[in-house]
Length: 287
Image (cartoon, rainbow, N blue to C red; front, side):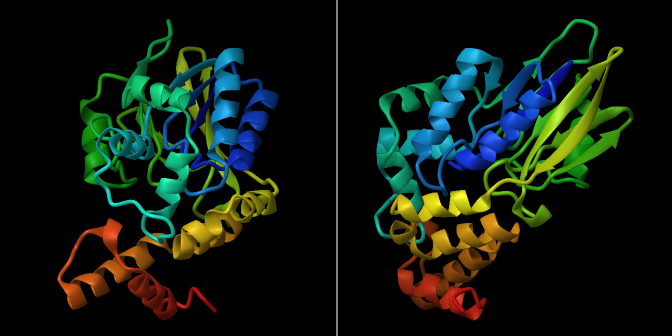
């Protein structure tokens, strides 16, 4: 038995397809999708259509990530000050405007975590960030992961969110973070996913990095108009797609500090472009 586990696609159809195609070639019996299907890359509908096709053709389980929650919160409340163009929110609003009612209904139907029970095997828990919150973080090597493994009544827990692949084990129980299929960190930007191998009543994890034509994802970023609509954020995404080096948190943190120091404000979604530009210049991201 082989189960393909994919997380954090972030509208990168090409990275997602590379992982799915590899999983099918490897003989995956089913797929688990761990959320953050959209935002950051261009043409989110291409990603959603591929997910719907897979849902119709294979045994699949889906949960939502924090990006799906962002989309639903904006649709229901519209309180996030999203505008275009904007380094802070342009990508989010672009994504929202390119989703359909089918997509929103699909997101709304998804739980934030799940349990897979297969006869003869230990149960498998799966989540985006943590079992309790989509924005929770099960950071590899942390006491939180040890405590989670110690207390859980399952053999394996699968997660994403951090975009950092890896495993951790405690007393025979395992956590596997499958990384990101869409905006991967490290491994030269190669798309990441995992396969859970079931054999003789036990689970063995395999973490994979799949090379694909990253120029296609970059082309979509520009061709869709998203590059102009999300300003500095698009440059950060492009750099990560091509290199696997993420500077987004560093840039956001500095822009937010400038905003707080100079204007006394702390809301990330309203950071003016001048602070994004200054942060990017200080970090050498515009040269």
